[in-house]
Image 1 (tube, one colour):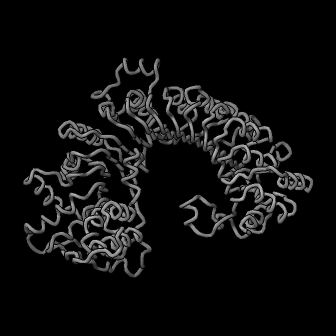
Image 2 (cartoon, helix red, strand yellow; image 1 turned 135 degrees about the horizontal axis):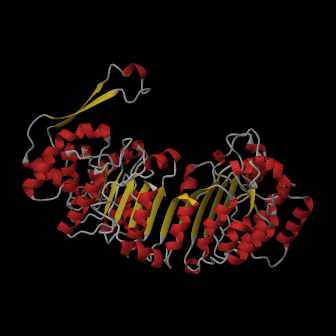
Length: 608
């Protein structure tokens, strides 16, 4: 391995070790991963490969530039291994990577996958200085993502060497590992041994299982969970975060999580209804649980297949009657700060009524319900007084079925007050996002005034609804246009003036007349009006309404709005604007929409 040169950095600030470490920490291939671990968020599993390769190359060159950079750059380089062990094999002098073209696929380019075959080869012995280089890098690893199927094939022949070395030295593979992510063991002996070795890292605090194969969530996952518990007891570590998530099928196996008493973050999705009912009393009793992410699988085929099927492991880990009764009478989740729940309204409603936390700050709900009544019953538990002083961020994605509309049993529109009315006492609310599918939200000026009065700390407001259905060729909302209320531009202006921290609004406003424009201009010209300087982004129409919104003189309207809100700006063209300050991007809209009044007004807000 090439050694860094003896040169020193020229700028005095770069001689400060803390500054240099902070700089290189931002160049980590996955810079948010370790921060997410510390905050109790879910693990970040993936990275864009081109960016990751470039960043790793930059860190490598920096480590070789001068001695002052060697340690900080190496720490950042090896802190996260997002694609398995392979990068560490380069510590062995005799390790080679050979890439060959696959003659069966190369003629088709990448149409059928990668046209290359990769071979990992060890062309000689591993010497003591090789292991020294290996351990120097391994001590720096904090987060490790085990390679998926294709890369696993390359790495598997080397794992016996690594595991044998760990046994010989009586040291963990990664001594300071904080988190690892892997597929379940599936009962494979070598993978079981590897997971056990990773789990015995004394500083381990976060584990993520990501089953990949259809029909996954095997019964062996229960054994993997038991192995984690055994390792925790053996090392004295305390697991803080556990994530179990599959994109293929719902978990319908007993997961005895009650014994991980130090858990602060749990993600389990998707789960069967039976497992959901089994998990809630256990998770509710965890005294330190701060984040819960759960999704219930309600796919009809899945529900039918699992109905009446006993969960494997229930005999070994039954839910006691005392747990059931205590949860039913007292609820739980007393330390919960963040909740994300996905399911039908009755399941989420049950969970919300059991949450006894007075520090709940962030709630995301993804719900399906048949009728408007289901929406109202879902939101009702959030009106509890115990949430009024703490809840700051609320996201509601409400999907209602179309058949009740087609049959005439339900209206396509729903009064916004019917949803928001119970939530108006949440005076600490700062961020509200409501998305409604197959129902149009009818919002009046009075609704907006109530928001301004009830949520003085509001920073972001987004309310969108879509009445389209895949089985129709027309927009059902057209039939109800006369009955749909939309707030006036003046009402939204009043909201932004009263909520002095408001940064962004996305809401469908009503058509504006010349008389209303004159009134707005007079208000903007009023002496003594103090501009609200935080308001930056205003999307005044969405969906089909974006094409139809009628506005008067756009130049005059833009001037009046900028006078009231000097920081107001239109769409940007750089993705960097969105990443750094959530500025809407021009390319969110089609070229056809660029010629509408709504978009032209937003563009004029960029003119200074």
